Amino acid sequence: MRPFQSPFAKPPGQGLSSSTVNVLWGFANFVIAYPLIVDVGDFNLYAVDQVIAVGLGCLLMGVMAARLFGRFHGGDAPTGS
Image (tube, rainbow, N blue to C red; front, side, top):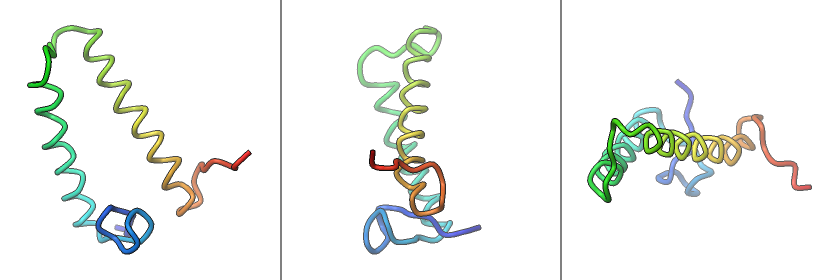
């Protein structure tokens, strides 16, 4: 696996981290997000509108992260115009 950016790299968000650090960072994000989604408020896993809202939020954050980090790996990055 190739190294990738993480908040623990030097400089943060731009330097590269090992694949193990990235897996641990992703898991930490899941551990934090799950109780926030399920326990905060009144989320119902069987309410389609709520599941769609969470799914769209995850998709939007993923696209934003892909565009941010794309500049480091030749991906789809903003052109600045």
